[in-house]
Length: 424
Image 1 (cartoon, one colour):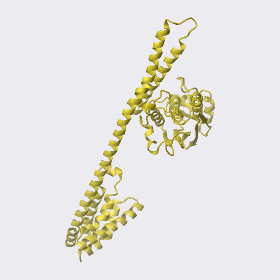
Image 2 (cartoon, one colour):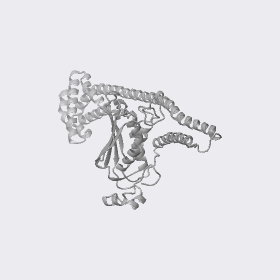
Image 3 (cartoon, one colour):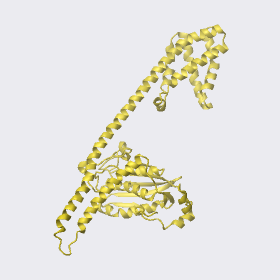
Image 4 (cartoon, helix red, strand yellow):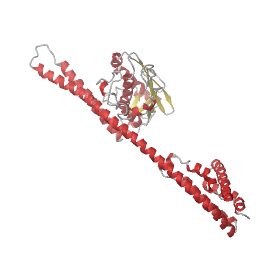
């Protein structure tokens, strides 16, 4: 009996044993058996013609089937598979054939498997080199972007810090000049107010930098208390009224399901996160535009949506805006005010908001058709916050218990302005 006939004779046993050894699950086994049948068809053809290249097509497919994870971890799946198939073929040949027939079969398939292993190793090496080349290119692009961001930040930060310092210095100089010239009835209150304004702005910049550092080092601590999202939004609407009026904008805060649900979160940090997003919407919406806040309840979460009729965000920037210094204003357009249309800033607000929301176990993303300063496509920010009704702090749990409907009535009225230091 010829070698080709012997290979055909043990073929079904080979495929069955290989499938049992290599596949998991009935569906996977069925698909894998089809691939094995194809491989052994080509192996028989190679043995018959003496040309090992017949198996190249299936080897190429197996070698290129590696996932990104396989390539990152250096897995050689096709090479390993061929080694296993070769070992199983030898094992089955020894069991099913006599010694002479088995030796003839092994001698016939050895060059084919050697060729297949060489091709698989070459293809896997090429794909792995390609993977690392892509990684190097990606890292290089990130480093270039970081370098540009660093340069932009230095430029913008210089303006951010210089403005309040100049303000403080100017009012302090004026205070010195008028100190000896004051007549009865005159007040130095406007000068002191100017110094106070400069000090507040300087403190805000420093606080933002500290918050970014805490978020980067996973050191942001949360003071979770029972709160009402709708109450936080009411406070923001009240506190941003002047900014909205100065820009001739409309801020529309709608009531929504879930807004009046009590939940455990850090009221001061949630206020800070939502304020940053609202200020971003105000800054990139032209005068006369509309900023809308609404939301809904999802299983286990409350979603807050902040939409604007502004200039929108390009698709490539919709993830970058949450990186620190990822989207900086131009230094030549810089303004120390937080609400000037397209005014520059240190590029920390959205990064801080993302860090605060993720520290609560939530997530945030932006949705916009694109950037266009003529058609004004607008942007919607989606904020998901876990609807936690139990605190991780045993003391708070004993104090408030689980936030059921009855306990909500008991704590209602205790909620205070989260911008104050007093507990909510």
